[in-house]
Image 1 (spheres, rainbow, N blue to C red):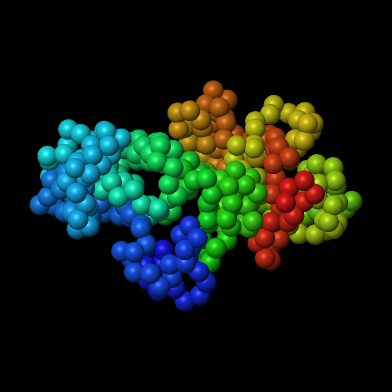
Image 2 (cartoon, rainbow, N blue to C red; image 1 turned 90 degrees about the horizontal axis):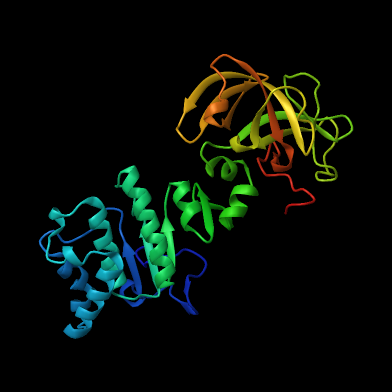
Length: 324
């Protein structure tokens, strides 16, 4: 719809101060980078980059200047005489971006541009795109299913689910203050843990469902609207667990639960623990040197200052006094 390839059923699309709902795609001053590169296989890199300028009758001198500028920016000067079949995936993606950049448009559209690349190259190209955006300073709409890409590249993220906008916010707020369980579970790897819990009698903490009567104290005055006996979903991210040697961590906003280690997954820089807390599955992170053995029972401290509480019926996050 932004590019003009689909019609708009309601609302307005504005590029700068101009409404473009009925403008032809060629009149919107947009450049698009496709998932599949969409390079012309019989043309050289230079010809691929200048094709759009040729069709718009841009003078040759200007074409050469723009190609030289963009090729230097993307570090593809040695590739200008090659054809796409002679390039690697990362090089093709740079050429596809170069073809968009020579236009100097008002808006860039990136349609999952890194999904066809291997993991190492994807990380490298992610950095290239971020540097490119910082250098060029143009508004960019970037579509991705990779939440790491979204978190690292975006200044604002729009999380979509079944065609409906769930949350539009900064990466920090999306991660720390998700509006509902879908957003909370989608952003972050490993995903946020969701435990069933009940509000303690005096509303001052939580009791994990199917567990003992141990109260996990909530920060004082934070969730003043909770009612004793109320059922809630208790959300905590894996990095907000920590291993403790005993029940001595009930301080500085931390609470302790007992857990059984079902699986240990070393990843190098950290170790992922697949656990069960009173029969409910949860994932925790720990330092490799501190990792317990599979089948071991451990105590996990939870940073209660980082919790998110969700309504089990609506899946919406419960508002608290400190965070909107």
